[in-house]
Amino acid sequence: MSLTAAQRFHAYANPARFMALSDRLLTPLWAAALLTIAVGLWFALFNSPPDYQQGETVRIMYVHVPSAWLAMFGYSVMAFASAIALIFRHPLADVAAKSAAPIGAAFTFLALVTGSLWGKPMWGTWWEWDARMTSVLILLFLYLGYMALWAAIEDPVRAARAAAVLALAGAINIPVIRYSVVWWNTLHQPASVFRMDGPTIAPSMLLPLGLMAIGFTLLFLALHLVRMRAEIMRRRVRALRLARASSSEA
Amino acid sequence: MRRAFLALAARDIRLAAGIGGGGGMAVFFFLTVVAIVPLGVGPDRPVLELLAPGMLWVGLLLASLLTLDRMFQADVEDGSFDLLSMGPLPLELVAVAKSLAHWVVTGLPLVVAAPVLGILLNLPPERMPLLVMAMLAGTPALSFIGAVGAALTVGIRRGGLLASLLVLPFYIPVLIFGVGAVEAAAGGFEGQAGMQAMLLLGAISLASFVIGPLGAAAALRANLR
Image (tube, rainbow over all chains, first blue to last red; front, side, top):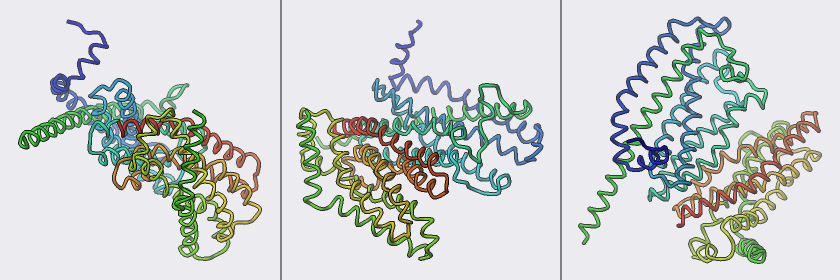
């Protein structure tokens, strides 16, 4: 039996179906993620040339740049899922949005920390208030605010709607981060991979960078599925507790 | 519809003026924040002059956050919000009326107070008109963006602190361009950079005038269905 896209979209509104599918997907996803990251790290640390100006410190890039991409990817996932949740009331969408937030926040933190470690030897400072860094810091605040709002509202349905509005409002920041190095003339270097005229980075460095980016994305997806499954279980436990409490009262 | 809108805005302004809590308290808070700066960084006049525009803007942001949580909370608590949500006015326009009232009651007095407090921070008098203009262009955004935060945290106990945490990241552009507009004039290259910052401030205010009420109404519906 083949399903149309719309039917599939609704079929996975059933948490039981989602649990069965994600259960089957998780093991290959973990394996692919760890393998890609392992190969990527080997290239990044041992089998790629040091930069002619930056020397060995350039290897921080292979963690820093994918983390920064994933920080923005995580927020995009969250904002997209929030939009789906608000528009179609898809029951898995707010689970997806909620689960993406802590992972995205962790990658944002990682990007800021590795950037700081990289900045010290290269720019001579741990931190500089330039547009790219400031907008990524704001991204971290948005993640934390989003998580705080979820934590503050007890009813999950109400919390989901309120948090979705916040996530969509914060999505304004994503293009600002992307173009911050173009709009403002800053310390942070401009984009060198995703450019209209092709990447300006050496192929020997592009390979480990690409592998790490793919590996980190797979890792994000695996972690996201795990967190979504945990969230669905948590809601089941909550529903069972509520049911038991109300039956023992009667 | 227009009568209901004006009546709502007028009611909010009268309520805030009558109780004396909102605007007066915010200005007083603004004064105390500005007063502790010289005590913290030392009363060195050139240093204060350097810090003045930034500190005035930071104080202004904090002061306008202080009064946010009452924007919808009071009406939800005493039940008048139920009446409003059933009335002829869509929630979006209710949010516009309330944000406008918030600006008149809090934003305007803060802008009026800013040059006076600038004297305390040794701000040169020739930069005061520019500061006031930048603040007039920027403060409406604070009320309209703040409305979203206030609406998101309505019905949460001690929601004021959470509202501040949610709203502050969205205030950062106003702060950056607000200070930029005043600083650029000091740096000697008047016109261009200062004008650009001023125009961007106005753009943020206008955009928030549209997006803020839409977000606030969506958040109110989510919280109070």
